[in-house]
Length: 96
Ligand code: SF4
Image (tube, rainbow, N blue to C red):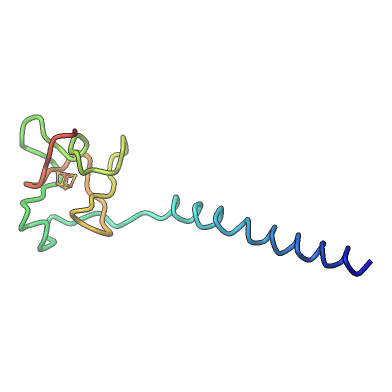
């Protein structure tokens, strides 16, 4: 009887722990970073624009862009900010 109660409480603890990563992942999916401003000092230094004027080059086709097919997304050059898929900066590199 005592062992059964212990098993029940172990199961309850394990069940609770299993829910934590799911909650963390769900939180990450809904979190959205602020858009990078063209007035940001690093953005200015790298000539970032939210609308590329460089033929054939934009954030969406940059090898560094992490936004997939989204209209905006992360770029490791600007940590914690999202860049516009249509944007560009002078760190642009071709996708491998
Ligand atoms: Fe856009 Fe520049 Fe980042 Fe490439 S490196 S995704 S061009 S901001």
